[in-house]
Amino acid sequence: MTFTAFSPKQLKVLTWWCRNSVYKDRDAIICDGAVRSGKTMCMSVSFIAWAMGNFNDTSFALCGKTVTSLRRNVITPLLPVLRELGFECSEKVSKGLVEVTYGRTTNRFYLFGGRDESSASLIQGLTLGGVLLDEVALMPRSFVEQALARCSVTDSKLWFNCNPENPLHWFYTEWIKKAEEKNCLYLHFVMEDNPSLSKAIIERYHNLYSGAFYERFVEGKWVAAEGLVYPFFNAESHVTDSPDCCEKYYISCDYGTVNPFSLGLWGLYDGVWYRIDEYYWSSKREGSLKTDEEYYEKLCELAGGRNIESIIADPSAVSFMECIRRHGKFRVVPAKNDVADGIRRVSEAIKGGRIKICGCCRDILREFGLYRWADGAQKDVPEKENDHAMDDMRYFVSTILYGAGDDGFAVIVAERM
Image (cartoon, rainbow, N blue to C red):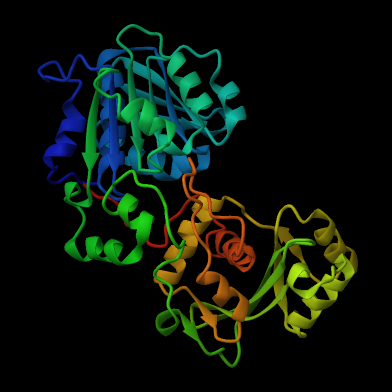
């Protein structure tokens, strides 16, 4: 990897801790803003350079939402850069550790994932010279605070990096809004701060998002999600006829007894996934309940003799998944069920033309016009109504279209500096 020009903001990230910097006495740095804005690589290179220039035989922590996402987003692009700059790097995958050497200086960089509240216990007991928290807004507060408490070595510093979330998010209220009070250098990034992005790529991102996701990922604002969840959805662009035949088929399922039950049949044709048919049962609307066996019969009718790769089921539908397995006809897998990430993925898939809805699927089309964000919520959550076909679609997109990664985007653009 060859470094070319840096933007002024990137240079500030790279040098804020240096002896001649006016920010050298700050205890922390926070970089937030738009996706692909060049903050992650600069911050990670700067973090390693700071650690190697000020400490020896010291432990540090590199943290992401998961270790998998940390390796993908930070470690994999970082190590070749460090080696090109003259550092010796040795990754010990089984120990979650990267050892970095420069001359006679060697330091240890431990990798941690802050997925949920239980993750805080993973980092307990360490004494750290510093910590870098990549995508800190996706981590639970308990994990972050435990990581910060480990930084007790003299002259330790804290490094935070994230894309915006809800303006009531604890990191925004406790750290970004109190940056001066906590002696932090706060830098806000936009895509134009990354000189490696072409105008065409920036325009692609402008077209990829809408609503709150556009304001957060493109404009870099901490805004609340409100109104329709998919305000851009329209019949002219996103509704079509069914293809004559498909290469692969899946069925997605949102399970309900008192609440509605929804199945979606998805077919792949020429690189696009079509919702070619559906089954929807509302016991309130119809006036009667159905059993798991009756739902299974409807599942078989929807499959219609097609070779179904898998049933992607509501992970809470334990009894129905067992019913499907007992019959031995279909493979069933529990869906990925992160709501906010799933909605973002669906938005990207629809706007990117990766999924389309066929006109016969009336219940999902009805829900598109009714599915709204809950007002005043501290997290991005939709209202718990008119969300059943929406949920089965989200299960399909998160598990099949994005199943290989934890939090990938529909378009991934490598940052080259």
